[in-house]
Amino acid sequence: MADHEVVTPVPGTFYRRPDPDSDPFKNEGDTVEAGDTIGVVEIMKNFQQVEAQVGGTLSRFLVETEDFVAAGQPVAVVDDGA
Amino acid sequence: MNRVLVANRGEIAVRIIRAAHDLGLEAVAVYSAADGAAPHVRMADEAVAIGPPPAGKSYLDMSAIVEAARTSGAEGVHPGYGFLAERADFASMVEGAGLRYVGPKPEHIELMGDKARAREAAEAGGVPTIPGSEGAVTDADEAAAVAGKIGYPVALKAAGGGGGRGIRIVHDQAMLHSQYKTAAREAAVAFDDARIYVERFITQARHVEVQVLGDGERTIHLHERECSLQRRRQKVVEESPAPRLAEATRVGLYEAAIALCNEIGYRSAGTVEFLVDASSGEFFFIEMNTRIQVEHPVTEAITGIDLIAEQLRIAAGEPLRLRQEDVAPRGCAIELRINAEDPANNFMPSPGQLHRVVLPAGPWVRVDTWMEPGGEVPPFYDSLLGKVIVWGPDRASALARARRALGELEVESVKTTKPLLAELLRQDWFNAGEFDTGTLERWLEATTNGSAGA
Image 1 (cartoon, rainbow over the protein chains, first blue to last red):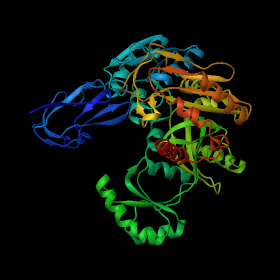
Image 2 (image 1 turned 45 degrees about the vertical axis):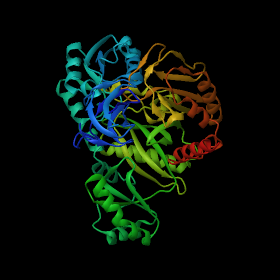
Image 3 (image 1 turned 90 degrees about the vertical axis):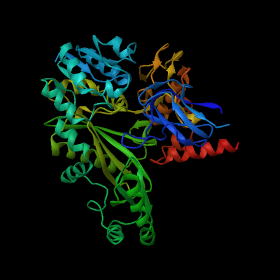
Image 4 (image 1 turned 60 degrees about the horizontal axis):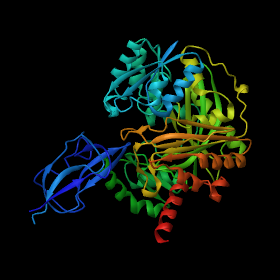
């Protein structure tokens, strides 16, 4: 098995849900496919999606909702099962 | 009033502090942990830290701001635009604390914040509103009956939509019948509300707004601003006077704006926004902004009137000093908004440290900004870095000066909208004043597709 880090392309405030009333995009243990949104980063009143680059199992989040993230910072780990 | 607290950040905080100092007032700044080194903090006579970087915990924290006003001995609070401007509960809280709110009465903020009530107020003042259904329609037949009365094309609008979302344009009765169910179903999914209302759709609309100033007893207008060049409903360039506007339409807009303000007894600076049908010259009330606006310097440049100083005087209890005949606009002014966004990469926000900043200057060039070399553009707030405002005796000379001033502007290592503005200033349609609210987005789409194929 190989771990892949999901990184945010932009700095800002990280959220695991599209809005406060919705379910999280993904939970730990969920299956993800390449291109799936796993969170959003609020930057200058815009929301940028953070997408998984590879498919597999989302083994864990490295940051929590409302944490500040830097550009290029890993926010989650996906295990591709290989 | 000797001391005023500025409940904002960025270029507008700098602008308000300058107006206060011009009047001999002291200014108190508030700042989040991300803005400790920002110019508005340095320029103020006192600065109060109000919380961590996210706006929800600082610039939107009403109690922290009112408390900062109290402890710093401020007697008034200016909200600027965005953040807590146009929050009636904030205005009430400020006044409830025995402070002067530099803006309208709380009940007018509330009235104009409610679309349906604002429309009723406009109609009561005899101001034309966009013809449409009275509230939501019940089915396609009722929608068709309304459309038959007001004329096609019409927009089927989701009651829960807004900001351009949840709108379908239909061109005739057959199309209305075929689209109605889909529109209602989509509205139910997107907004959890299937209600649809019907409105006349204006194919070629221009966004023209009238600046007003009132003291609660009397209102004057300070002419119009043309703000049709928008991307995702964000204004990009504004100017005054509005090009290619018939004189009768212009006068009609002023009279309508004054009528609305007199109807309610409006206080402070405000803007009445209209859609103008470019083909017929008809105009319709959209909404009223109960605050100072980003583009207010355009009006200041043609009238020589400091709108923020007037707001401060009115808030201090002075009656409006100006008569309508004191407002004598001259020439043409254009404002270019400089945002920290990368137009070459789908307007991706571009925060970070500013290394090189060279600002334009010279005759009839004004730069309202908080940019400076070494400054930090935080990712937490909106992307407006500054505005370049130019004046000329006529539109052609103002356009030439805009090109000259923009050419002098240099900003490095944060991406800005300067290249987009420079390209815009080269377009024949822009120079001819031939555009509507959809032009910029259509042009951007065509340019992007064109360059992708090149």
